[in-house]
Amino acid sequence: MGCGNMFFTILITFSVSLITYNIIISGNAPLQQDFPGPSRRPSITVDPLIKMPLNRKRSSLSSSKRLFHTAVTASDSVYNTWQCRVMYYWFKKMKESKDGSDMGGFTRILHSGQTDQFMDEIPTFVAQPLPSGMDQGYIVLNRPWAFVQWLQQADIKEDYILMSEPDHIIVKPIPNLARDGMGAAFPFFYIEPKKYETVLRKYFPEENGPVTNIDPIGNSPVIVGKESLKKIAPTWMNVSLAMKKDPETDVAFGWVLEMYAYAVASSLHGVINILYKDFMIQPPWDKELGKTYIIHYTYGCDYTMKGELTYGKIGEWRFDKRSYGDVAPPKNLTLPPPGVPESVVTLVKMVNEATANIPNWSS
Image (cartoon, rainbow, N blue to C red):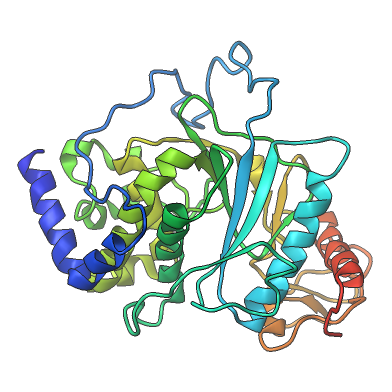
C-alpha cells in the first residue's frame, strides 16, 4: 500500500472515530474494511462517454437467469412506510408478470432498530441505526451502515443486489443489467466529480487515477454483484461519515453527500458501472415513460387545471410525496387534468392501484 493510501486510511479512521470501528467489527461476519490500493479496471472495452459495453451484442446479457435481490432501506416513519408499501406492491406485480425478469427476493432494510407492524406484509431485516448524534441530523447516513449489517447477517440467495428506494415504482420487469464484473447504475446530472476534484482528492487519492474514474451515480438505483457490494459497503459507510464530518465537503455536497460517497467507494474498489439513462425517470421533468423500468417521484408535480407546470409554486392540482409526511395518501387520488404528461398520470394511477389493493390501507 502506497504512502497516499496509508495517509488516507489514517485520515478516515480518525474522521469516523473508534465508534465506527467498534460498530463494524461487532458484525457476525466481518467485511473487508481497508481502503484498496490501485485497482484493476475490467478488461472489457467500454464506450468512454456513456460507459456501455462496445461488444454488447456479441456478449449478450445471457439467456439464463441471473437473479438479483432488491433491497430498500427505510426508517419507520409514516412517510417512508407508505412509500415502501406501494413500492413492494409493484415489485410483486412486476416479478410475477408473464414477461418474467431477473427479479429475485426483496428486503426492506429497516434501520430503526426495532420491528414494526408491517413485518408480515413486507420482507424486512431490522438494522440498528448509527449511535445517537453520529448522523448529525443527516438520516441518510444510516443507509450505508444498514447495508453493512444486512450484508453481514442476512442469508442472501441471489448473486446480485439491486439497491432501490421507497419512492421508486417499478413500471416493468427489470432484467439484470449488470455484467462482466461491472455494476449498472443511473447517471445523475448533478453528480459531477470533475467539478469537485479538490474536495474529492481527500477521499480519492491521485494514485487511484483521475477523478473521472468516479462514476456520476448514487447508490440507487444500482445493480451490483453481491460480493462486490460486501467490499464496497464498509468503505461507503466510512467515506460518508468522513465527508459529513469535514465542513468543506459537507457544504460542497449537501444532501447528495452520501451519493458521492457511494460513487467514490465503488471506484476505490474497482467496480465501474454501465450507465443506463433508461433505468428510471423523474417526473415532472421526464414526461414520457419510454423504455424506463422505474418511476422515481422525488420531485413535486404541480399544475394548473389547464395542465401547465407551475414548479416552485403550489399548483391547482398537485402530487408531492412531501404532502404525506405524517399520514399516508388517501385512496383514489384525483387524477391530473388534461395536458399533464404521461409520466405524472401513470405515477398517480399506479399509486391509486396500489392503495386500492393493499390490505388495511389507512384511508
